[in-house]
Structures are given as C-alpha cells and as structure tokens.
Length: 80
Image (cartoon, rainbow, N blue to C red; front, side, top):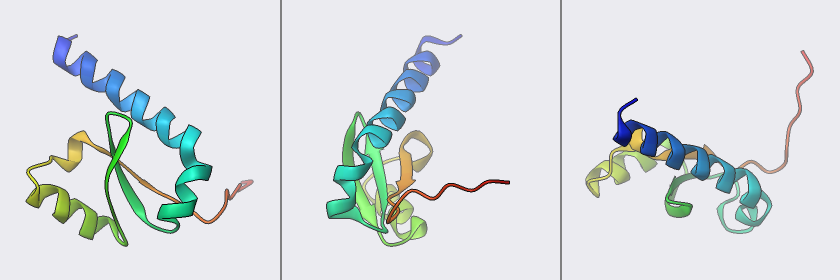
C-alpha cells in the first residue's frame, strides 16, 4: 500500500475515533451542525453539508480528505 494512502487512512480513523469520543462535548457547541475534522481538531462547521464543503474548498481544503460528521441532538438507534 502506498505510504501516503496508509497515513491518510490512519488519520481518517483517528479523526473518526476523535468524533465518537468527543460527541457529547461537541453537542454543546455544534448541536445539529456539520463539523469538519482534521488531525483530531474541528476546523470548521456549518448548518448544511453543502455550506461546509463550499467553505472548505474556498479555504483550499479538499473535503474528500477531511472527515465531515453531523452532530445530532441525541443518539438514535434503529432496529431493522
């Protein structure tokens, strides 16, 4: 596997874990918003995914290389 790809995948995994571990704390500031996470930091947020992606692109950030998650009011568990 390409070393850069391996590094990117590892960073993505760390950012996803960061979001999962900090979700409760993030609700206080980012409730019902989309957040962009890079290197275990919230780098931006927005009311819609389109707004956030546009702002990231305008700041020379590639949204495809950044974790974007929605901060919900509470956990919803669906049983199918």
